[in-house]
Amino acid sequence: MRPMRVLLIAAVLCVGRVWGCPDEVPATGAAAGQLQVQRPNILLIISEDNGPQLSCYGDPFVRTPHLDRLAAEGLRFQRAFVAQAGCSQSRASLLTGLYPHQHGQIGLATWGFRMYRPDLPTLPGLLRAAGYRTGIIGKLHVNPESAFPFDFSRIPVANFQRRNLGDYARSASEFLSTDKDRPFLLQVNFPEAHDPFLTQVDGLPQQPLSAADVRCLPEAGLDPPGLRPIVADYYNCLMRLDSLVGDLLEVLEGSGRASETMVIYLGDHGADLLRGKRTSFEGGLRIPLLIRWPGRVVPQVRDELVTSVDLLPTILQAVDQDIPAGLAGRPLQPLFRPEVVRWRTMLFSEYHTHAAASNYYPQRAVRTDRWKLIENLLPEEVHPDYDVTFRKLSKEAERRKIPGGLDLHAEVSGAAPNVRTAYARMRRPGRFELYDLQTDPHEFCDVSTAPEHAETLRSLQQSLLQWRQETGDPLLLAENLRRLTAEVRAVQDKSEGRQLVWGYPEYFFGREPAAAGDLPKTQTVRKKKRLP
Image 1 (spheres, helix red, strand yellow):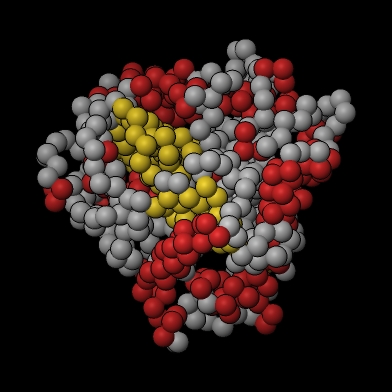
Image 2 (cartoon, rainbow, N blue to C red):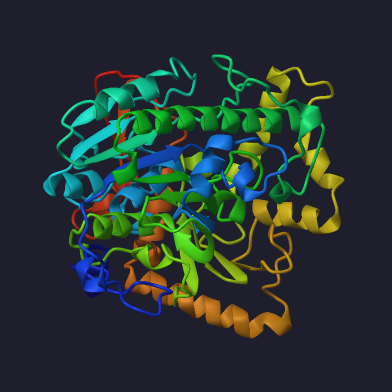
């Protein structure tokens, strides 16, 4: 095995440095001087495909009273982000405390992408070992499922058709009504606001928004009339989500266990509209994150840069368990009270693929308080997801029979010059993109070639490279990038009743030579309900 590969393996399995932080992460809650208290229950609520488009985050169109109340009673993080703007990738990072290139879930579980090792420490496994009863309601969407030992499971599908939405609260009631002497971890995964964007389900929301009530999200840089009905129903999904969260919190209150429960709510990534999901832009990575813990979290709003990989160490410290060495994040407990604290100065993220060839475009990114640097690992090549997203939204407008349809290429052609340039760059980016988020919060103007920002560019390039080296990024090896690119691009569609077996978990670390041509293999499996 070559020395570089040995180094990468060691870095993936034991990452000692907490990046962008002025201090090292304490090993346990006690080491941080935390008072010894009864271990809390954990209610983890995850929504689909939504950024901070909630009224508590200042969105002018949506109405989310239950989430607003949760925010008012707890901690609202204004600048929270995920590790990758994709469902399986983001959820695996949340549950392992690692970046996708560290745990291996670099694409959707429904396309066979999987973690490198089934024995990586995970949230349900660690809490179950600590005596917690563990439950999950809704899809897991991470491979292998055996790495996530939940004692209780209900609705193990994506449920994007929104069938029997009342079953989420009923299942939670069932879980909370048994084994009351043990602390619990309950993860509830709602289907909102994933597409299809449905106007109303089971009478929710009671007063749906229409195209006349909304504008397109600002990160799009476009506001075509043909897109507004779709955006309106995206907001309707969020208002329906709010009602479902309200029902869930009512069940928690009725159980008598709310006062001893830490409630964490977050989105898994941004909206599946323009310049959101499946990108490294703020619209894809920024999420809502709320934490309520009566008596332990002072209600407030924090502006620090936080990430979903912080949640595993936060939960472990809250339940007074040792934090495994090498996690990518740090406990959020210093931010639970209103004091000013030293905190990280930069955050990192990445992108690989979503399904397969149609979305493949590996990227790495670093964000500071002011700046965002994106590194495209296949510069000057066409990003396939650009046209995929345009076609998807145009077909949705056609399905809805929206008058005039939706021609996004024409809309871009008629947009302001900086927006036109931003979309052209998104379709065929260069090696680096640098954005001044202070003056350009929606990332329309790349200043990577501006002489006055040369030092900022150089500094962020160095920080990004150093992070990739110390976290064992397998794509630092050109051969790994070449082989992964060949392997993913060989897959254009997934055959019904077959499951892809990717070679990258082996050849990334030299454990086994890849098959000839680096083509993924398939194995026949029992046909089961597919997740989109």
